Amino acid sequence: MGINRKHIAVLCDYELLPNRIGGMDHFFWAFQKVCDENNITIDWFFPNTTNILEYKNFNINASKASVQTTFLDVLKNRKVVYSHIITHFLELCSPFYKLVKQLTKAKLIVVDHNPRPLEGYGLKKRFKKRLKGIIYSSYIDVFVGVSKYTSNEILKDFGRHLKPKLVTIYNGVIVDDILARTNFEYKVPKFLVVSHLRESKGIQDLIEAVVLLPEITRALLQVDIYGDGHYKSILTTKMESLGVGDNFKFFGSVDNIKDHYINYDYLLQPTHMECFSLSILESLAANVPVITTPVGGNKEVIEYGINGFILPEKNPKVWAQALEGLLKKEQRITRKTRPLIEDSFSISKMVHNYMGLIIS
Image (tube, rainbow, N blue to C red):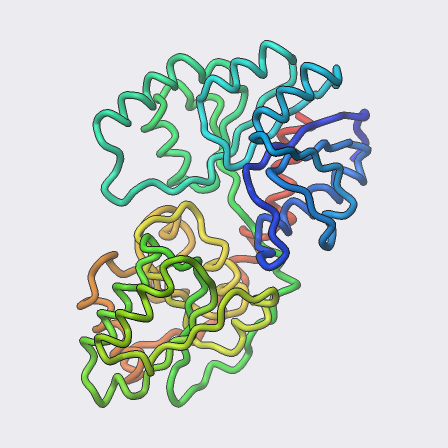
């Protein structure tokens, strides 16, 4: 891909943590590598700096100020000429983008990763978002939704006049790094949860579902939970008080989660809000079907009975029925789920699509 030298900036309100290497970290590394190969210089702006793994080769700008303030200072004081500016995890349609456009002619690309509340925004917040869309959207050249759901929410939040400059680019995973199971036979299915531990992830609903299982069936169930967060103490208290503590085991956050999916038969994700889940993609890449809810972009990747099951959120009774059916082998999925991820949700395809925005 022969292109002229470009200098771009990537702004991410995403703290770099050595004990949390996730899908976005792998995307940033892959994106940097492809940009290097194509003679594109990247200035990265994060809340903090780090030398872990591939980040040691990044040109990272960080300060005690916000990512936005640090970047504006660079534009004012260093006289850098950027061709493109990409933002991740920053608020859309804010005054920041007007300030940026006053200092540079760079093409502004903003990426929306944010899930919406299950019950939607209140009237006051909806009005504020629509007003911001009218005032500030003209300063943004391209809006990116990480799922069709997210793209539709952008239009709902900020106005349908954004449709001509809205694109959908799905998140992706490094498929080759994920071990795939080949044995689909089991006496009792094994379940895992991969999630940050907070209320919106719905694990409390899963606990209530386990309580509803017949005692003889419940005795067969083991759910291993990978992830951490402030909500863990609330979950453990709930498990113990309801007498199902033995059905769950916490493993915390692990660096090599991609090596663990192969040991399980189903991923459980009872989430209340989601944008587009990387853990779902990783699980499917490991040939591990997913039981989840219809929120966010989940329905864009999960086909009921083919590579998983879509169950209503906040409904322990239905989840209990599904778990009982799986434990009794009354329903099961034994086909490979990896090909879909290889074809449509690889990190290489994700990088390719973002590169298309830069070289177009």
